[in-house]
Image 1 (spheres, rainbow, N blue to C red):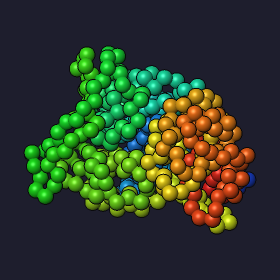
Image 2: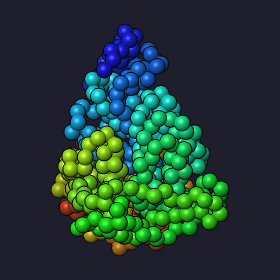
Image 3: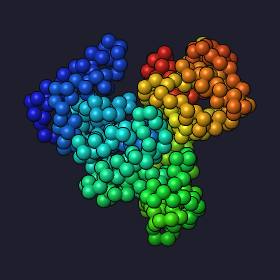
Image 4: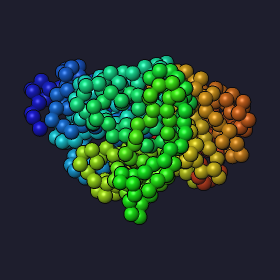
Length: 429
């Protein structure tokens, strides 16, 4: 890699020092403060750190931290990878990530949806990964159609390779100006934000379609199946692009029609979808599936997600859900025989507006013990009461956990509530 100019070297070094001091004093993991210090000394530091690296930027409303982790794990088969593993997904976090692994030839950076155009322009990344768009932190991020429009403008004319979820109409629209796109059928369980065509505003039809692999048949492999995620506009020509990668239950079908069983350790359909996107991205870097897939199977948790914490004989599995689409994914992996603790805050990183709680169908929780905690527990309690879900209020997560009998319990929390629980038990990776 090209050596950094002296000013950039100094800014990078001082940023790493600030990050180390932040960790040593217990003020944080250093992934933001280090970047802020570096950028204050050299405003163009991100561009300089990104030079001569093979970079992938990963953006979505849900799943970007997990997908970033999966892609990183796969690319480590090729060499060292710089990444923002703890989700610091704005430019300061990107500077910290690249600075802390200054000699890594590869980089995989999670990017906040709102910041993606800026980071594309600054880093010149060769690979962009786009997975889904849905309502999230509306008081900060704004209307998601506007985000998709900004993606379109940022990708137009760029010499980038985009890996995009063809099943999400907003993602397909946002990615459609790119010169080169690999389309992945990763599914779209949450459809409530995309019933209208982003091109003309007309209604979208969703219907089944037949998939036939390249060449019409592959010996011993799946030759056709119904793609439940097909969509098309009634009033214009905008429709779902033809995918070359497919999620097929517990397996991925690659562009050659071969079926590979995923068998990953992360639970739920959403993580299998993340894995398909990760495999498509890894192949873009020249890494074949047979080498990438074992690396994906090594990932057991992501920034505390899916880990189990223990106290006084109680084993609590931690699940993160920060918007309606995320809650739908969390419900998919719940153990229906276990009690569940729900914790919701409304701090800055969560978004101050909790009206999104009314978009979540909580009736799936009927028939099990439900405990409600968090700073906005009364908001959630009212929503559960209207949904006819019996619950117990708790003043704190600790109180809710203590009320459980010894054994297993599932926990669903939004962002800052989740981080508070992690801090209470130690920040498991």
